[in-house]
Image 1 (spheres, rainbow, N blue to C red):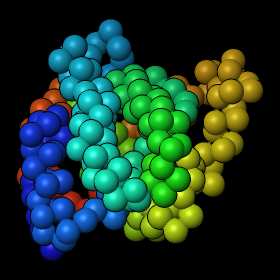
Image 2 (cartoon, rainbow, N blue to C red):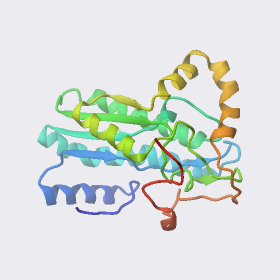
Image 3 (cartoon, rainbow, N blue to C red):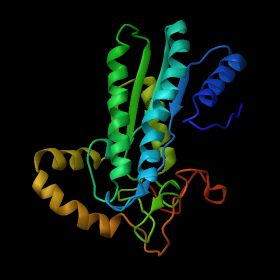
Image 4 (cartoon, rainbow, N blue to C red):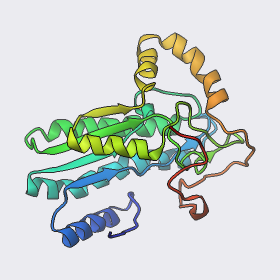
Length: 238
């Protein structure tokens, strides 16, 4: 196992990681891109720098990964790239405008790349969109709400999402909603927007925030928080 820490917003660092992988293993078969950060707060209350960084990490970070990986895939004429997207790339929710904007933009980038690579049938670009997942992203998020976030139910384990990623490698698809509630939520957002808009805020207050009290924080938006790093968050998943 080769470990090469880096910032996805640092183009040179991303390229160095790809070059190191190719130099070590001779080729690049699979790339799974998961890097993202989150912020809670109404749009009018969010620090502009926090908003920009959340969007930058998802959109520009993904762009940098694409730019570093694609020349190798094109040279090989094969390879698989899976991006972990989100249910919130297809719907919106109050107090999560930065993350929603980031994920909608990221999915637009993914879909565009899928169209641009039609000349390479053995190069696959896919997105897996989980719903609530028990990872530390919620407790590490920036917030101005006075509390941290909580994954809305149904909450899935990271292992379940990982299995969805592996399945995407075996049977590539443009986009896979990983979560049985996702299609229902998306249908409500698209087909019954007045009803969706009336319900999403109250439901988020009940199921989307932790019952804690914290001062305003930028979380891990600008820098890692090592003491909170983990493969799982403090939530029960299925």
